[in-house]
Image 1: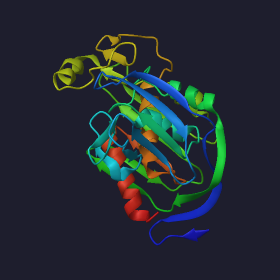
Image 2: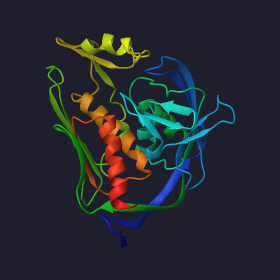
Image 3: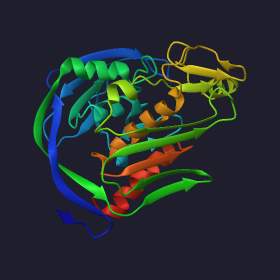
Image 4: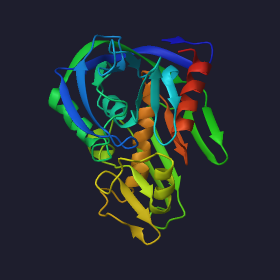
Amino acid sequence: MKASQSGASTHLGSGTATLATAVTRSGIGLHTGTLTQVRILPSEPGKGRYFVRVDRPNAPEIPAQIAFVRQTLLSTELVNGDASVRTVEHLLAALAGMGVDNARIEIDGSELPLLDGSAQEWVAAIAQAGLVSQSERETWAILEPIYVRQGDAFVAAIPSPELRFTYGIDFELAAIGNQWHSWNPAKESFATDIAPARTFGLAHQIDHLRANGLIKGGSLDNALVCGVDGWINPPLRFSNEPVRHKLLDLVGDLSLLGSFPTAHFLAYKASHSLHAQLVLELLAKTNF
């Protein structure tokens, strides 16, 4: 094991993996409302997870790395040159949560399909394809707390003997209220405990968001909607499904690191923006 100069250590861990075969899924994008098809293919060791806009001349590649994040308003968008891809967090969470380090993700439009609002259809696709082990994975550990905050919202990476993700939310609507969830990848299944959690929205915000050109593809079939009198489209898959979905988003956004350090990631009332800011802080302070 070698220690870096600034709060992280690295060592060789278990091997990396890619898909055994290609899989395809299609659906409507949350914000654009347009139909796209996604084909996830095996990729060589060290290539990482990356998108390919096959509908664009020369099929430009967009790496799933923090350096390519353009905006984080209600989703995470990546851009390389004039090619972009939006709402990548659910698929990236599924790939990372299922242990897929290297994948070529071909898409014929600018936004990933929302599918049912969760990551479970992506997980099913990955399980259908199967995995192939590749090269050794270099892992790293956080040695000192690193955090970002905005008001009372924050995301932190805390030294820990094992990888863990914990999230908290607090909404005035009684049906959501204050919720917490913690997930240990070594002991609990991403496929059953995190992936099925669907995105959610607040009924009183829908008209405003649509007036601003957002959530054009959102519906009661692909998102939970909560109003002052409770959930408009129950039942929930978990009693705390909203916070589990926020944890899902966190996993997807933190996957832009390439690999997770051994740390306890703790978030409260955070956002895609704060998630991305933590990734930048981790890279700046650990030199990984």
